[in-house]
Length: 290
Length: 275
Image (cartoon, rainbow over all chains, first blue to last red; front, top):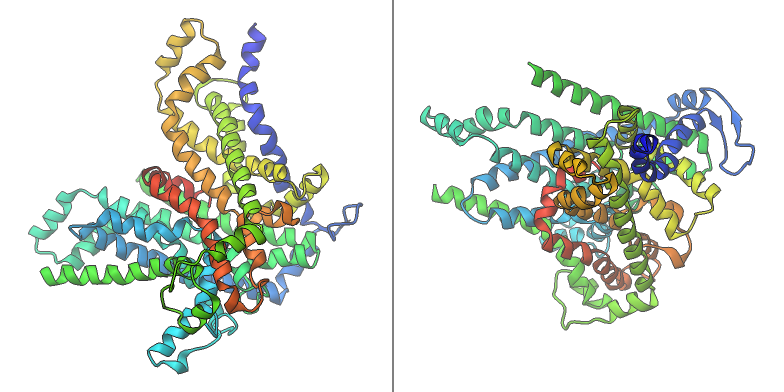
């Protein structure tokens, strides 16, 4: 009786633990191990142990460096556009007398679509011959601006980022909108009495009150940009000029059968993600403690 | 004052066009012929033409893909909710040895991105003989989603007063009945929001099916639609077909979004953790 009572909690936990250990914890540990091996994914011996060779190779791999650079551009541009647009829309929506719920639900619509659908939508827009963007430019007489948007390495990356901004900005808007609704209206009244105009109210009341929300938004925007995969993979399958770290890893593993090298890239990607997100959490907690 | 408000609405209208037009365009294209689309990209359909839908649904086997997506998403959501609500109960309300350790073990799953697991998941699936099977995908989703669901449900359960459970225990109610008769009904609101998030995540997922499912028989909608991209002849004439496929793929989640808008928005920040 006493024993069953002691073991009871584990009976509740085991059904969830089993798939979790097999499909999450084990694969994670396995990635760490695999990153020290040279393996083509098929050899039953499991490949040969090469120590840190995969990591050394990564440092001098110009293709990886290029993918990493693209990924950093992605992080910066995505954060600026998605958070900027989200914030502007949230401020405007919280200010207008009518239609807030309808408009915010509409703006959030792209967020519910999957990566493949977003890719299809934007592949058509960027298509060189019949794509909506080029057709629109021709319509308004800007023929010299038309181009093969995704084939041109100068524009391809930015076109992809823009599609991803369209996909996800609604999330940031909702986040900021909820944050603004938490602000004490008295603060605005006080600022008005002091003669602050709307720009000053935004700068001195809204922005400082949104500090924690902004932190959350930055962490999500960072994580989503650094791990971006499906729209890049689907819209530019060759990765010409648009390779990012996740697609580079995928290509190494599933196209070139370099499973060990791919695992090393995955470990580095994870570290880059964790360092930033953990330090964000750390900073936030220290600020709250003060 | 009045003018500035009008200006704001004007700006919002522009953003709305950019947000909605691409989506409207898929619906629009799906009812037109390829020729119409090429000749007049911004025009409206001359008549409501449903041939593209019939072609995609039957000839391109989207009926099969749809069914696969539905089976995978529904069963993963239900099983995840079951497993995680069972696990969340002791983690929130019972004292036992290793409690902290197990909780943190689950939290590792939220922190570690899918990229750091994807390569071995492929090999584990191969070793277990669950490649190219719907069951395999469902099992992998369990492993991926359970920590997130536990995190949400445990937090919710923490807010339920212990007195309620103690009273039941004094009356001699066994723990499992407490879970079934008290815990489950109480966490219903959390379960509904969670179900929306989980379903949406499975329905939209691309990464796991793309590495696991390769036979036509087993494709889900996101894989089916990208696989067929460009396989229907010249780009322009295949537009209506792809559009119809995209509508079929996204209509269920649009309906879900319209009907369960509140739950969706409430669970959004939590859902973002899973994205």
